[in-house]
Image (cartoon, rainbow, N blue to C red; front, top):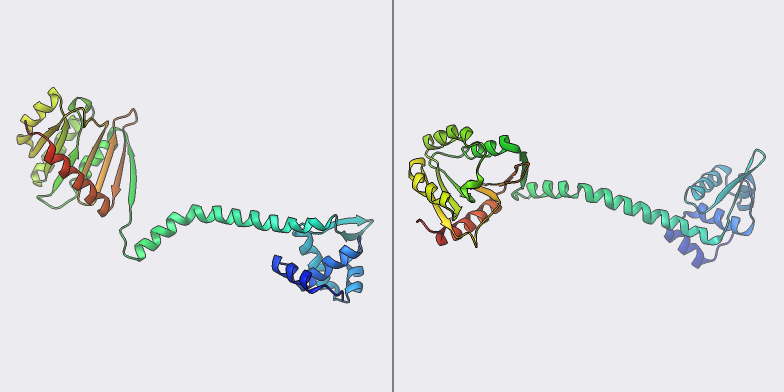
Length: 260
């Protein structure tokens, strides 16, 4: 058994070497190119324990291994190589952190649900079919409900108009009322005149302060946004707090809008 100074023994234990690994390491510092049996004899430790310790030190990058014929021998290339083990640990911790960060949003969502917090559900839709789907989703609310729409210049609404005639009829049967904000234009004035026949009210905001390239609808706990881009991308967000906030924003804008 090799006597190891207390301060060295303490540090080796702190960085993760067990008692046998520390003994083997110090033995190899004093004598290089030792086989398993040589180290076992030197330390007066069981061959099996020395074998496990040697393999572990090799895996940790602290000890090197070579062959002399069929005989495996172990050696330390340089004492500073013990730092390789700490680098391995740092890389391992970094990898584990990255893996944890990937699942952390799901863990937070699970925790929020368990704490009776309101989850945030987000769904993405695309194209004309997605836009039509959003309109029909707004019918999924009690009779006499309401849909608030942040519209734009009606001239931009050039898709799916014929497909939404039936939607409007179903909305009116359920007595679901719509309030619609529009950007000021000649088309917007026509929409205001026509609105009373469609169970909705429309108001206008000046183009210099309100000219979105989107259409946003709010009902119940849902907020939907459609971007008037080439792909006609839409998202549906279901969250009570977000929906309530958007309703408040609508009421602020509505109070400033003109009926004309």
